[in-house]
Length: 357
Image (cartoon, rainbow, N blue to C red; front, side):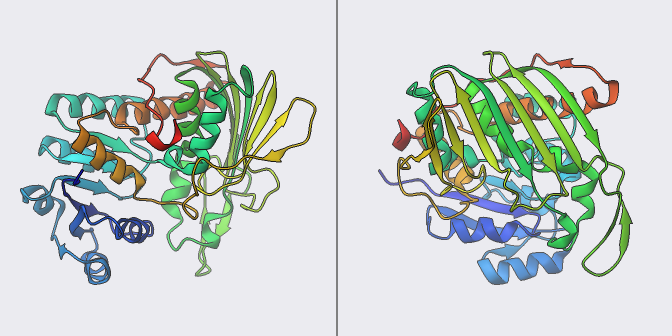
């Protein structure tokens, strides 16, 4: 069946925007109309490289009736404002993570999207990857038995060692920036969380940018969370902006009554997957199909286009992203008050990819 074209505009032309444009190129039914940024020179460089036109402002994007979907790639603190403006203009929205920085803001966005009759989707979308779908299929098939314990490791290194603008990352901290990756995977597989215990601290408060400029951080750069899911599974999530990505503690381990499953990387679609019966050694598990090398950033937009075309629910929906924000905020509250925090938000679990059934 011929896919209907989806016409998009990019808002925010920072580091990640190029990855979206490059992975959208092989998909002609996604048409990039243009981009905007608070620094219009970045938008000019972006469209020179990837096509489309420069919109002078977000308002100009929203005034363009040809734009079907706004792709929000702005910094964390701008997400709520940009998404709100887009929804009020009647535009569907795909946003980078996190959806918001507070539970109330996230739930308000979901409600606004419903009221406006708009679709709202939000990264991370790595559960749509071949390796991640393989893990979910193995668990659904019961090879692990009842999964009771999960270890998720996010050692994301020192942002200033590779990113030209580390400040926004340290302002939100590793939990909100990268803890969302395994959380989206785990909530997809196990459903909503209900009880959260958190711990956090600043390991390295004084740092230096690549340009040699000293800066100080106050938000915890190490956060540990115990997450109790409504189905009985318990997960330990570790996130930090200190230990490098080559740490031997990496990926996600799933432990069940009959065996264990290892996903070597929660972000890479071609990550290794290994299974071990209880007490035995790990052996490789073939992926359900060849994995995209590393990450296809545009896959959430592609799935959104298919959902619109087929009139089906989104696989990475705003309501699930809002539940993930609820988990993040509960961790933050728990580490501040020193005791577990209950949450009661929920969401409908999405369907697996058709090729992973």
